Length: 344
Image (cartoon, rainbow, N blue to C red; front, side, top):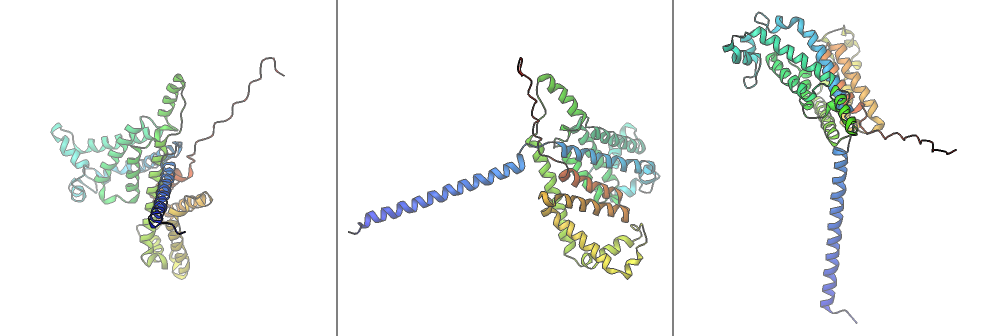
């Protein structure tokens, strides 16, 4: 006999309801699995060693830059320098504080431009030295970032990519736990923890800070590569030719490239390959080391052949710290078993 129409309808509805429930359950499971993956990616406890390497490397490069600039500071930005106050004010963004702004602020106290310039530079160097050693790391990062920003605003006509990247990553050091490893802060904290019977452990904050730095670098290189790829000059070698032949960048005689244009073309393709591939090939362990080496060689080449030494040093430091220093927590070493009393 055939099933009554009402029973058949109820059976069909129950099947549809069961299918909907299974679909909803599968959706919940998928969302839960995705949330778990995101949580592991962004918040799994990690060592602070990569962030400490970023802090140390960045501070070391900027201290070297400060040592190079210090002897000519007044010749460039002093009252009788090339960029004197009226000329600096013409180039300085008016919505950001610089040395001119600080001079006006302290003028009622009788403090002139020269001591303010020296004091700002000295505070910048001292904060970088504290950052290098990991002494009061967050305070040092705040002082280094703010004084670096003030000097950038003051020297706006001479600022280029290296200064922008330095200021961005100094800002990151305000928030990430870069003083949790390889620092005087860590040594003092470890002494207090030892007295309390605790130990240093990996933290989710270190993982999150590292991911922010890594993703920032991936976006930067991908955006730079896409911008280069949209034009013709990097495909036909013209950009390489101009980079090594312009008087302000020329370090060696590369006029021989005129008779061997394929060399400049191959160099341009290599730059595109490194920058476009960075965001995708830096993550797998199989290709990570090759990308780190290729990126470092690219920027060292920029330093050697274009004279942009600070830029050529900062960018490898960022990549090496973010992707070259292990962040995974070390497994605790097994404790040796003590011989039992009276045992053989």
